Picture 1 (cartoon, rainbow, N blue to C red):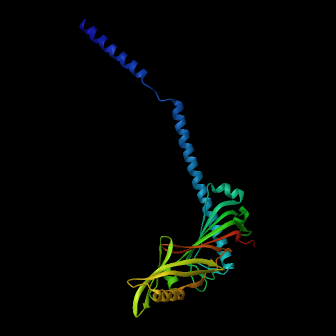
Picture 2 (picture 1 turned 180 degrees about the horizontal axis):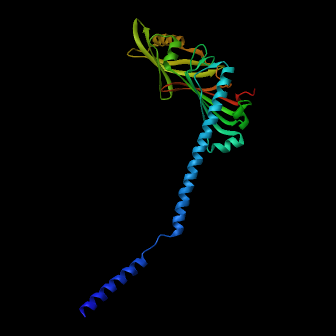
Picture 3 (picture 1 turned 90 degrees about the vertical axis):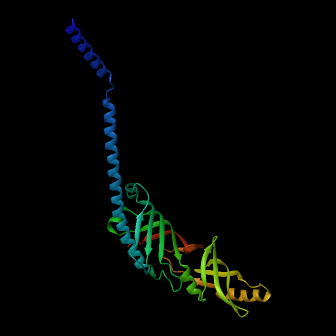
Length: 275
């Protein structure tokens, strides 16, 4: 009896274990298939993104050569242009022959673009709604035209002060205004004066008109005001801007902490003229 009971007990336990195993949730085959498909889809998307960026790189190199040739035609001397094509995906833009944005960075700008007075050591250009056929990119022949172009460059305050030519004069930005400080001989004393400048752009020139100069630690009487007014007139200047490429025309000049920023614009401009 004891032996039978033991065997029966073992048999009962084994049956319960089998019942438990049968009741455990099993992975659904459909779920596993879905996971596999998602992994394959993500891999395919990754390959497409990589292929898209590789194709963009090829087009960027082709456009770099064309931009370099156009700059040489316009007499602009600079380091190798850095061209970047914006927008995604790239392939659809190639097939359409129209690009959302093309950025062109120019460094070490020399020659005609630098002009005789002010210098723009860097010039960042954004061309929008650019038309360029696939054949133009492949052959280098044909026109590349931008619907609109915006260019920005910065004139350092040191170079600007050097052109004004007043010893000890310093320029900086404060609260969105161009601020000047300079030493001045005033009533037998050499005292620092400071004030702000009105900035205007007219016919390719930047006009700086210094106003509201005040001396430090000196009464500001009528005689002092007259001397300050004469000094302000002497340091106010009209400085020609560089001749910019791609028919860019200056639309705004504003002071920033790093220098005087020049913004220029143009519409319907060839980035590369048809040969």
